[in-house]
Image (cartoon, rainbow, N blue to C red):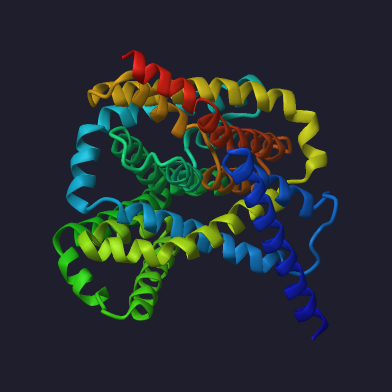
Length: 386
């Protein structure tokens, strides 16, 4: 009973604190994401007031937050639009992979951490945070912009790349045979292909199953199906985020709009919990020794993501302001990067890899949304000049 009371008290304090921080962010005119991350640092290990009992509950809430963020992002576009966008931006996806995986891999090799650490760090610097980027696009009203489909196609390309990369990394860390690693990768690719095929060819049946004139029933069906598919995807070594996103694109039209309206408050609540949990996982004391190196790596990554976004948007015929927005939207790092670093740390690849990855992600998770807000007037000026 005492533990339950403590859990409720802690959760209440965290949620109320997030509400106050959100109000402060609105007053200042910035995204609340950096403030949520700092709140997580304050309540985590080594922070000012570590949580006693609610961290495990918040961990589950964080997973739900990522699923809901990617589900609502998927609802913005249908399957045909996704496939067309992926085909049109495949070259940009490869450029994204090369430009942004290279800094992490090179840094690990120069530090003498070895090839396995280089593969892990390549993943840490490569993947944009789909969750944070989705929140930034929503907060700044960029969802309807011409460059947003380009950004989303790059995010999907990254997520699908992660579906291949994570099994390969896991096999390298575990030292399994080539055949065992190939089987794991095959299962991951097969799962993504099947779910995408179902979304493309049988989306109308999914919509018929989900559809309901009652908002309560509709909400339960949409969330339940998204979590079920996300859980199956996770079990098969595919990102839960990919599964939730594919459920979203299987639903379109008026039904997607109704689902979005119902999901928005729930998504915002659990998304805030996700960002807090990310901060909880980071010990402030271990960040300082690697802060300089992390800042340098973050600076390089900002430049490579800006180049990626500008290249992809230019190929799509988008003007200079849209190219700048596309690059800025790709800067944040988050969920995938921490998962990758966690796998490497658990395997004992190198003791400094975890703190470096945490500091790197914290810088870009905080700076990305802030940069998007700060450069908005500059982007508007560029658009007017053009």
